[in-house]
Image (cartoon, rainbow over all chains, first blue to last red; front, top):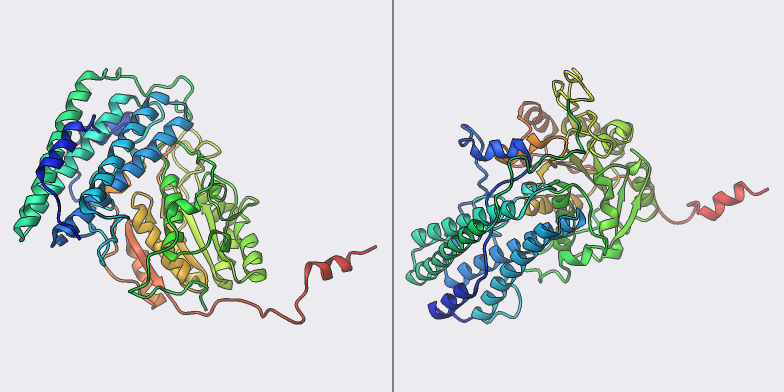
Length: 221
Length: 284
């Protein structure tokens, strides 16, 4: 098993990376309200495990990184299909693009490690802070009238979570090689956050009534 | 007697991936619907168990959740409202070699199919029953279902129904289900593991999946902030499980009860009637 090839290659990858992704978000008024609300006191933590402080070697760290990217790619691809089915082509295309980016990242990890197939998960399974990897968008974040801006907010949210994830790994790592690799990933995610923020700045903000549907599925007085 | 034994710790990687169980039909639910994740959990569970798609039958009734059979590459039967368990039981008894998984929703499963639910638990055929519960009839535009909260105020139930919510897990336990679990659609990997364990467990396995309906119950997006892994392991003591279920807040996720009751399976072989025998009885 090869060790991770450093920085030069990863830096090149980062530079090439197109745009970004989003934050938690859209769905009608209820969701907008929730996004602004402070964390719920007493809400149950979503923690399933200690996070990847279980990464004791570079190979294990890379396995986590692969799983994180692959799962994110899969979710964005699902989102693209959902939005296509609902004829929201602009957002579908954006999710498709995000899926391609994440897929490319996962392939790069395989290549860097010389793996010919996806790595086997650790015997305990992947232990994320939440139920899924930090770059995986929540299925309920979609709304049929959402706009590219919302999709980018979701991507931004995910990139920030990934940045935190790798920062935590770097902090907890006991092996210098793991710390170095985790820091590289963290730096890369920081760059992705910046790129998405730029992308968001170029994207028209939705009007306040973006979720208003003159013929809504749920009719309320 | 389980058709799907647990794998050894050093078992080779599954020859199947989740994609092998997806059909060419693209799923259609509302964007944000939890059922997308449950479909993904089905396919992941099948891959965990490394089952050949043609050895699985997915049976459903009517409703949003019951669209699932068409989205898998397994055998499927999209049946009559509330009668998925009746059809699935017949199939399992006639073809015990198949892994039979039943998909339903809270309306289909607990209202129209409520009586079948009770007796399927009691009969304990080797089925896995996955109910996607969103506390509303989504397909017919938002009527209260048996699990809807009594004070849920909506256009179609002004002021709420005032009716006590059905507690499916306790009822399943009391009626004799051999495996009882609660899962959450926002955790598709965890749900896949639970479904896989349910399939591995002989007898009637019941998995209640909290699956948000973002169209008619947008407040269910908040569920992800409430769910938590069950703080206690599964028990084989039905009385203890019942006490836990009666006192929990509905957000504990995991396997809650796992018994060892032998599944119902009448003997195959000589003396067993075939469809041809039955047809002869109706010959003119």
